[in-house]
Length: 56
Length: 344
Image (cartoon, rainbow over all chains, first blue to last red; front, side, top):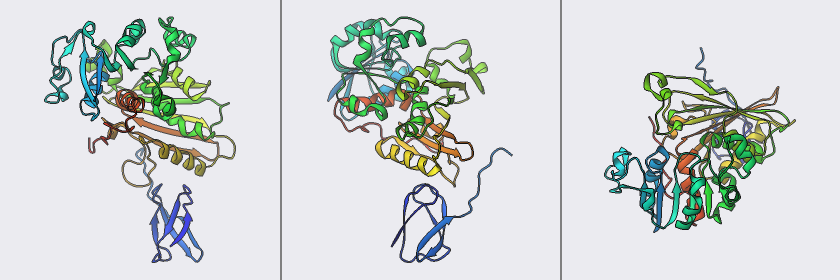
């Protein structure tokens, strides 16, 4: 299990041992989608998410 | 069991106190007074309490000694009888605005008349546990909180505690509020054809609850703008300010995370999926939670903090019961666990 922090909210995140490259995980704190961009060393980046717009 | 009585039990905050205290495992409600409803069953005024209690409204003159006395009177009344009330109960919680401000001059400025019992102002602890938990544990007299002030203060709390806010710049708190804030008494503006569907900015500045934000947050340059909207319950505060130089969104996350970790009724709502991505009062009806959200414009440092509450709960009776729990040494959340309804 690898430890890293969310690029959005800096919450602690644990990568399970069976995590795969390019897998989408969800930050347990702020709920953003994160793409696993590296396993060694572990790294994630924000994945695109659908924005909400009630104004149009 | 602790014996509790409510003076002014026929109003909305009195009814909400009754709903909470009747089901509180450590409290027995022995009296609820109302001159207008004297002799009537409590459920005839608060219909949700049918089959919950056989209590009848009694006269304020027949008030017996009790362990804790809740004052749910219109503003300006409790201060005239506080000496008598103190003889009847060791612990008093006043939901009105009479003892919220510590300074008599501040009271005169915001309420337009001299306080009738200025010596009592400093005996009361401001009844918002998120700000005064330690003092409440040893208090005998607790003030209520202004519902709008509470939404604003809780919206500001993480920014103030973490020292992220630029205090030299103005803070604007835009509040959207429901009709129950106006109380149970009717007026021409509350007539259904006039009130239904409104979006009415009835106090662009100068609302009395501004004094509680000034006092509790230590801010001088702050404005509350009040807009009445088509809800019955609920208040939504949208706080606009500026962060200190160098503060980033991650710092806000840490500040808000810390605030909700320390306070059982604060939650962060900042979601990237689903329908409820930001705080909304709608799903808080009947609950004591305050939901917090935030965002930051990194180009300008403009911070937007959002706080949603049920004005009758976290903004009045819920905070009063939470404060009572602390004062009497009970678990802080006792009797306040209801999470609200969805859908509603």
